[in-house]
Image (cartoon, rainbow, N blue to C red; front, side, top):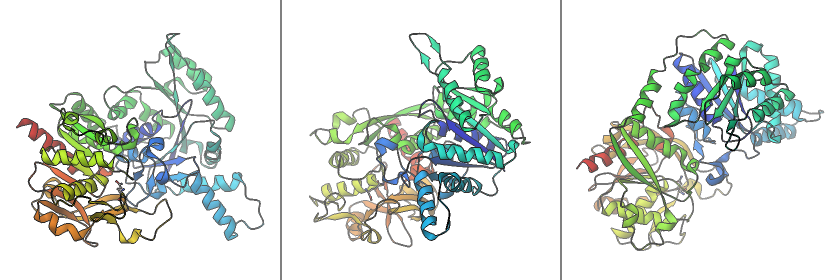
Amino acid sequence: MKYIFITGGVVSSLGKGLTAGSLGALLECRGLKVCTQKFDPYLNIDPGTMNPSQHGEVYVLQDGTETDLDLGHYERFTSSVLSQKNTLTSGQIYASVLQKERNGDYLGKTVQVIPHVTNEIKERIYAAEEDADVVITEIGGTTGDIEGLPFLEALRQLALELDHENVLFVHVTLIPFLKAAGELKTKPTQQSVAKLREIGIQPDIIICRTEIPISDDMRQKISLFCNVPVKSVIEELDLKVSIYELPSLLHSEKLDEIVCQKLRIQTQACDIQPWENIVEKIKFPKHECTVGLVAKYLDVKDAYKSVYEAIAHSGIGNDCKVNVEVIDAEELEQLNDVDEFFRDIDGILLAGGFGNRGIEGKILAAKFAREHHIPYFGLCLGMQIAAIEFARHVLHYADANSTEMVPETSYPIIRMMLDQINITQKGGTMRLGTYPCKLIPETKAHNAYKSTYVNERHRHRYEFNNDYREEFEKHGMLASGINPELNLIEILELRDHPWFVGVQFHPEFQSKPRQAHPLFLAFIAAILQKKQR
Ligand code: GLN
């Protein structure tokens, strides 16, 4: 097995995850089987308890692992389905080491970062998928971070243990452009590589994030100061249209060729065509529409990362440029007349969320979509909101609510799931991961999926209260997807509406650029149909 390690230098947010995912995509285009991992140096056990405005969305894997949004990039760019084995934090490592210490596993020894913590890290790398040709491991954070040191030390040891031709280090770095001087600067990159070499890691490839092209002279300079061959200085220009341009861009810089040469892997030629087709579709769409994303995390796109991506995929699938307009749920609830807010909106999307903030604004948005026949797509909380709105304004249950928001509501349309009631501990305790859903024939959901059984990923504590199901259905809100084992409602949809669908799960986690999620596809298709009419 071959190992590629991706580190980052100078600043965070360089898009290491995208680079790792794109490299995975390129290796798959050469017929290789790729496994991707992300190691995060923070001390949380997982990001499940972190605020999305700080950390971005919590991405949920098939097995229910709550993890970093970069794993979403890996799943979107490659064909792998990831699990708990593909993610690791310092918190998990220390928890495991301390547990072993208490179990007496190290009896008599002093427990230390080297070798106990570093061994734990290496074990996780060695435990990556058995039948992969290449394992790509991204180390979160930036070179020089204190928390990151044990990881880098573990990589250094690993490179020594494995033959050198089996290990490759890729360093992603920033080449800042100084406006006043009118030039790009390589010094931060030199220093960050110097830092890595101090630890004993010599990068093989340097990927330079830059807003303008780097000259040949500059490549020579980086090569000289960072001790890499000049062809291994790879330019990664800011992307103009879409993140899905990245595989083609890196391919044109010969990244996959250099990686395969260095690791001595014989492969078929790289078939980049599928990625070029996607870029072509994105660049020249036939249609255009605007989706209103009613949200409470406003300035951080990362908080709804997979939702944005799934919308983009559905745009690709529908030959449509989809603009996303973020609508502040809290601002909405201050208004009496919300019409003005939705004037230029063709469809309304309500994403998941927790807690009371902005809830009433979201209910207004659902009401507007229902009454004005605007295509509506509710994800998780978005389905719950649609149900509450329907109960209040169609069934006239004035104070209908979720017990998450008002525990004593007289109409608990949404209530805590039975198996959640006695749980007080946070982190990994919700209903998480993949559950089956049976679709009812001749519904919008069934038409979209064109299938009777599907599996979707979950992350929630509350559910639709089945006591109200009959009443809902009698008045036109149908349960079109059901968990067959637990009889939980997974999908609600309005009968007499162009497209109004709420799902208790998170379809956005399974959408891919080359295969948009069926419900996202149907949502945008419904918008276009309505516009054409
Ligand atoms: N807060 C709701 C619940 O726990 C919805 C969660 C979500 O949108 N992910 O059920």
